[in-house]
Image (cartoon, rainbow, N blue to C red):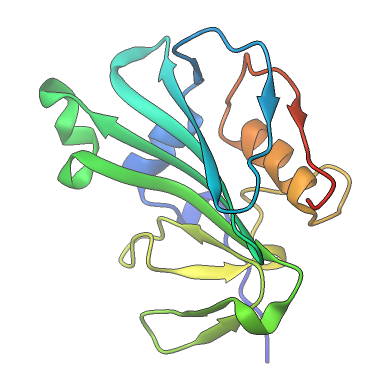
Length: 171
């Protein structure tokens, strides 16, 4: 069975536009620490090119999984860019134990283990694929560790101006 590789060309055009805008923190951040189990870190972002769209980067850590989310919210004037006013751009779900992280795609395909949700035309953010079945968020070092995927997400989605993330021992 041939595995389909998803690229930037497969992403919904309006989401791709948001993804490629440069994003910076709204407030000055001097230190970032990976959240402990059961907690999340949320960073508000904005684009110098369009300050009416507010972005957020959220990192959630549970006891057995990690989740990285880049999303956007729009004020009234820019809602045309975002369906329903709030939109996911990229979501990465990761685990060291594949059997505990299961996702069912709209076509019935079942994924187990770490995967990425991209806004695929016709499916939205409900569609997911294995990390190695896409070329949108690719870690430079070839490792699909949480740390590598976090850095790759920042680079792929043009998030700049953040201090280096301090990772806890469990991540």
